[in-house]
Length: 469
Image: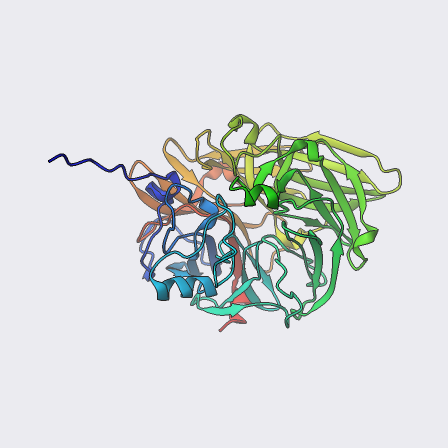
């Protein structure tokens, strides 16, 4: 009798520190090198994919996993760690069934699924609006989450005005008006884009469709004091292609690339479009008005291989660029302003949509996986750059700026991020002085449990947190 060995399929996004954790916990953080600043009060948050079940290991993509939040609550020099899954409708259905019921983005949507063709995993990013935290996924509605407990309140549809249309992973909040501005996109049918304005009380006050020729992945936008900056770039969706069993999302540079500028409360027909060189922007740094020009800073790559394998990965690394869009003449000026390949740019959000000076980001590690190996700071006024190297075998994700409460200095505060030391197989939280990277970390917290790699980070300060209690 011959016994045939079976090869278990592998997937890099289900292995090592990409692998999910299946335990929710709350523990004090007791192992600290350095000193946690006593003035640092609030919650550092990191969201990411953490699949409860996987339908097909081979086709699983990192974007597919159920959302889990990892939190460190800081108070008077102490830190407490919590993690919880976001209890979305799809998560609870699969929990009851005891198995995965949805395909991922590498497979065609299953329109025969009685629960709908797609699951909203709420796994991508955060926004704070109307005294509440929203967890975001760009293919569906946001989910409200309570702090510091991380309990899921439920889906947010803005009094049903969202009407089943997807929202955005990266809405922007105006620091003066409290308005939350977002560009939601729908890949399968027109209108492919809608522009939303939510007021400071969480009410949708403006919703307008924007006409573009084809469904595209529109992961981020930017705002200025009076405008929204929209990016129509060639990462396209094709439903007939998906129905033939091919990958529905492809990089198509022949589709062209353009940047749109829309007055905040105008109709979608009033977008001023500017043709630009094809490239991909996943994340903007900031935008602002300078006379007749709209200035956009963002991380731009020549293409993206994130959703396909048949292209040159070197072209996927993003570098900081600036576009100056002249509303009077229609002229576009594009410049690359740094040779540091980086992503996850963050600013002091009190400067959102206004002229700013500082930006913090994570430098790409030249690895097959999307890993980062250094904290980076840019001074947009002087052109200076600072890099804090993590060292061999140490990788980070997105780090977020936490402002010192009561200070009006733009870089007065801390930059906080999770780091994985693959050599020691430990997870850390690293706290940097945002004003001086040359000093190295202020504190390094060895986490009481493993924190998997994930997506975006957020900060909710002590004053905001007090509104949740």
